[in-house]
Amino acid sequence: MVDQVTADLYVPDAGEEPLLAISSVSILRAAPVSRLSFRCRDDARAAAGKAFGVALPAKPLSAETTSDRIAFWLGPDEWMLIAPESDLEAVSAKLEAALESHPTSLVDVSHRQEAILVSGDRAVWLLNTGIPIDLDVSAFPVGSVTRTVFHKAPVMVWRTGEDSFVVEAWVSFMDYVAGLLVQSAGELSAA
Amino acid sequence: MLLIYCPYCEVERPELEFRCGGEAHIARPTDPSTQSDEQWADFLYMRTNTKGIYAERWRHIHGCGRFFNALRETVGDKFLKVYKTGEPKPDLDAIAKEASR
Image 1 (cartoon, rainbow over the protein chains, first blue to last red):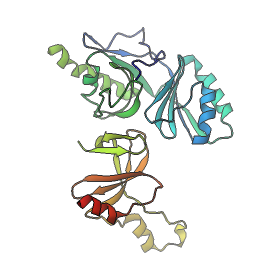
Image 2: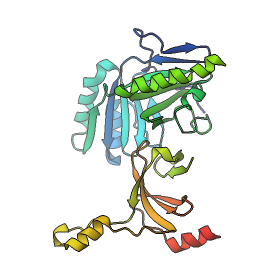
Image 3: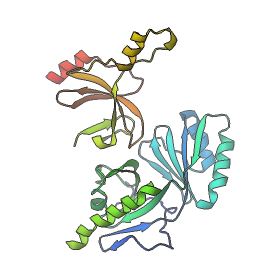
Image 4: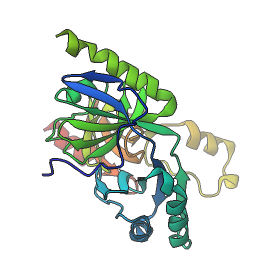
């Protein structure tokens, strides 16, 4: 089992103050990245992976990463592709050219959602204040990615290490998600 | 919390992530213009509403987003079997026998 996955694309946004910084858990806003929502049939998957630079995973809830590309499995015919902010046009052009003969959908959703980095000993506890799924490392191993709900907001969660997570939510829900996390963390500093 | 197995994600997830899509295996008439009003109303609205084992469509809306089918025991709210969209309807009598054992 892997202990840590390559998550070079998700770095803390240098211009932002930490949302939360206590000894047992921290919440940092992540710097912007390019996000592409991609859907295709099985026969186009290999070509899409080749054009994007990293294979699109077929295994449910898994992710394929390199230092500057991530492909998240979100559904049997749906992936979220992550690339550096400056690569958006190059990536879209390459995918479009490679997939001309296949029916596919490629949508730029870079600004639809944003990410926070939640890490620390109590990260699992903190996320489970709002996320109903089992985040134990046996049930949700390092490298797993899934969409789920955080209280009432849909979120995407990616486990990058045993105690570190990337949580993405739609821009307009992020204050709700981050706000509730910071409020729930009050329990930790009180104890 | 009720856990439902998603055949696409291949994991059990809480009910909160799912939405029920009503009775399964109701095919839309291929040529709607040949249908009488009664037949069309029947297709749109009439459901068996079984007390017992019921085949339903469920959607993993806050997960993979996919629809799948499930057999649910409507009295005890117990899921007996889930299967992917397109797979044939299981033999309900055999499942009922199995469940009552």
